[in-house]
Image (tube, rainbow, N blue to C red; front, side):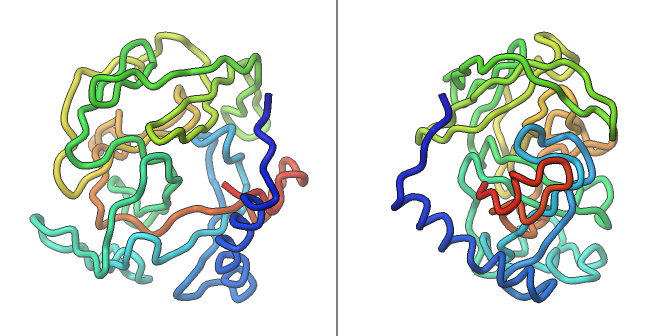
Length: 239
């Protein structure tokens, strides 16, 4: 059953997103910016073409936030952030793609520095504990623009009772098994909600993926769908 927000939680979400909508009205600002989702990697949370509002200083600021930040990446050994702090597990973040710093990508934070991560048959194990899934039934994935394939929708639960939905096409795909490893300092383990169609931290930078995401690359936290071309009912949806 879908969760029904209380009046208090709805008001809190609206207030927390106010800087995003104000920033969107002025195109970009020091507080907020808007980005267009280019791929299916975050379905069902974000659809191809969704315009998302991003709170820029959510995790502090770095040269990654500057227009020519791709030329200003700091030397190794520092995360290069002013007033920086880490995201929470479950946050949807936008960042400069490690494989191409000229591109902005969006994924969900699953692991923080020091976390022990593994995947077994698609299920994430975080610090030795499997993240529970709840089967929500059949769905469809838009693998490419206008091309839909059958999928199964699940609700995944992170520590802190943080719920989000994911899509699975295969129960044992090529990205579904990852040997245990520890997330290093100043890095994050991020995944797409579309688990079988996301070049995320399970895919190395050399292969065009994210690899372990340096904290410097963060550009902000995605907080709302400002406009959805696929489903107008999702417009103003709080993430």
